[in-house]
Length: 118
Image (cartoon, rainbow, N blue to C red; front, side, top):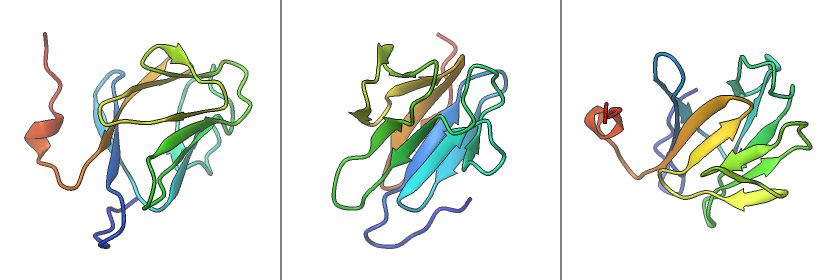
């Protein structure tokens, strides 16, 4: 996935917070999360559905996460999502046992994304 630099394109990132942390750049207007290899964000977790959730990132409205009828649900900041939930910068997302941190930024430096050991 690549980060588009279009004037009206949102720049969103997910940081995978399991094992070795890694950044996932979300581009376009949506990103599909799930176990299926065709998903934009493939999650290797048996508690995650093949197509578990979608993050919608319209250029003219807040980003939202939608639960796509998953068996185990989607959590934002430890609260179960009922259908969909608006996402805010630094929200913590859980799908199955997999934890992500959501970043919605105009620009970023690698140092902004470091994990603190506290």
